[in-house]
Length: 339
Image 1 (tube, helix red, strand yellow):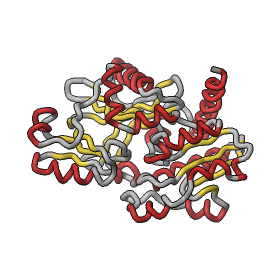
Image 2 (cartoon, one colour):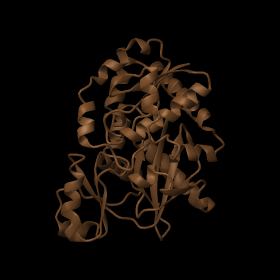
Image 3 (cartoon, rainbow, N blue to C red):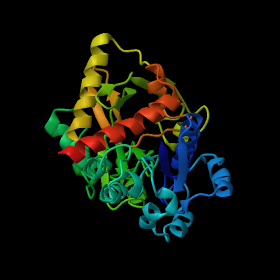
Image 4 (cartoon, helix red, strand yellow):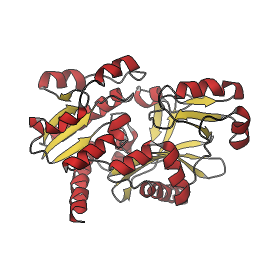
């Protein structure tokens, strides 16, 4: 197949996306596919640009606003009209955060009529907006921690969720802009930080307990994983730096616990109208209750990422995983065209 792999972009998760794209490009080429590497902030890459970009590492912190502002001057809509895109069978999205994951690019690709991996415009947008996603989780009967939206005063936050609390941008990933607030007097500073990354900020009840993640692919739920971060939380550094966390697949759960969290993951996936694949994150508290934190519509595909580890635990090597995601995209696209 001729496959365009899109990665990079202009979100704070650019480095992670490039690492995902690099893995996907290599995997698909290893299976004999013609691959068109495409940075949505720059365009289709020639061999020299590809070698330089795809050999870079994920840094310990997200790229700064000045670097991203330079990249944001490009015209992403022109990418689909590039000559190299002629005859493409499917577009593999290895983008994380921002317009590449939040529905904007998906809307553009839906207009082109080309199949692409992951969820469509609506599902992507709803999952990216954590406030909207959590409202839909509640409607679907998926437990999720309470979350007043800023602005909120100390007394209201204390009454609604207590301390500690998790302050985070409503539309960001990879824990960018996230703070665990342990003392009421630190709330304002944490909200100010989160506002640097989004125009909406949520203050979420902190759930102590075990950190779990559930990969979903098509109509199947893959093995549940458990995360043991070296830092206090599974933050940007823990996720993408070597030795930042230990991840165990399958998680050490009882049979009934595994079934319960997998069912909740599929409920969350369907509540947001997701398709293709997703990764649903949970906390398991001391009382045995599962709390859904968020849904990732384009989960990381780096060497350190959780979704490929879950697939490997199910006996799916990474090149097979990439091919399956492409095939799912083509099948779902064909199904929508028949309707």
